[in-house]
Image 1: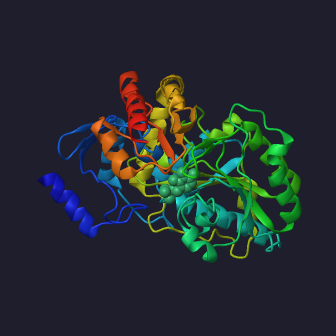
Image 2: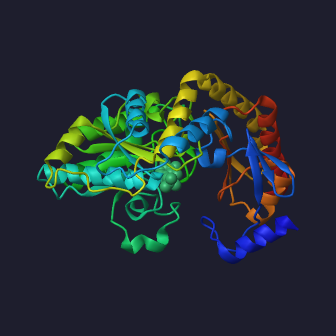
Image 3: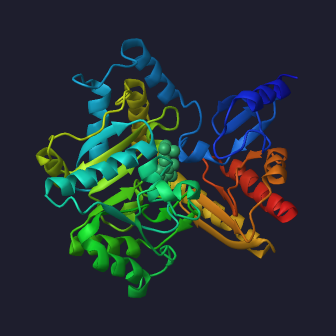
Length: 426
Ligand SMILES: *Cc1c(COP(=O)(O)O)cnc(C)c1O
């Protein structure tokens, strides 16, 4: 059977993310279209994951494909050192128009983790230029996730961040308590006390605070109060440290705002975006910085940012990103995200009554059912496929973040499958 042969070949020769080669059930995908994945054996699944936050307009969107085809025929790739091109310049201009106030320059890179490395380098170079090289540590909050490369790993949650194997080798950063105030709550002074204490004690060695605004993604799928984010901005200003927002998961509408920091009305000094930037067809990320950060880097020893990926500013990826941003401009994504949110809230609510469920929460086009115990993927993953949906739990978290174009009936398929699988198999 073609199906078994693909997965068998895979098991002999390929690694998958965070999984031993033979650990889990594996499914071959033959085609994708709209919100559906077609498996090798012909089964169709409604996608609840947007391929990890990325495919916000659905798969194979004609406008993005047309842009890619046009770009392929003129300039698929060229090095970015000493050369420039319309897709990279056009995209950078568009990102700066959309971005929170104050951000004024863009560094394009290949993936989210790399954009975080660049953000950290910018913060370190900023303080070197200001003759304060001892300000070289980062302060973050527990429960965060910022990527899998070494500097990014150093600011992931030390427990849920999946990187404890390397803990002895990572830069020793400062971790404040997870923001415990829920999205709907008011942020009280005691909620930020731990962060404030760390800032007060270590300000002279801190380069920047880094966190995911409002939604902590892979570190726990947790939504916290915008007031917390406002307080962090105030504290960063008070103690004179830079603020880095990692909007790689939250950017481009997922939480109901273009960027999650808009819930709090604050701007960072440095911002990372990735994931949904190209609408999910190409790997691309960007690090944005304020004029103040750019000026400091310009005054640093070399005057240059110390980074330069081979595929920087890849024109195909930039063309896809421009097409995706055009779609966001043209299409009523706010309305769609709002109605997905309302439906997820209503239809996931009954999960709260299930014995295995600890919490149910929804924000924008993100729905989370948190369990008391981790799921058994060997049982749960095939059960979701049997139910006709692609939902991929992570530890104690069963969650969906569907493409914005998901219809109400497809969304119901997802929420019904979650209720059924959680009640039967957890
Ligand atoms: C996914 C993610 C990253 C890492 O992005 P990659 O493209 O996987 O390297 C960083 N930060 C956040 C918040 C993410 O969700």
